[in-house]
Length: 150
Image (cartoon, rainbow, N blue to C red):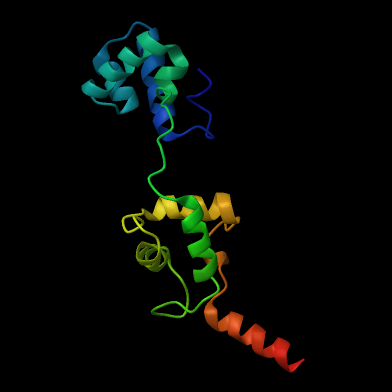
């Protein structure tokens, strides 16, 4: 199998591919466990997925329907637009935790938004790849001051 040596595949997929390769050679479950590092329960689940979905399903998991979003993303995007150009509540720069806390206060039902979900919204809707790409408030103020003097 090429997935076993492919470093661009996840470690999980490579372990699963190793287990399937060992089993396809007719060796025992114990040898597959030792070669792949998967336990007996994982191997049983892997074989079950292999029977149901084939090799691709066994290696990469079953296809799942996308879950419905619990939050009003438009409201979160608007709140983010306001927050990233404003002064952080505490500190000199925004963190995912401080943004999530403030969004929880601003957006109804947004109090329990995860950092990962917030990061995904920032990436997909605002094009902000990382929290580090939000300019600190002091730097924004300095740029405004320089612009007003010039």
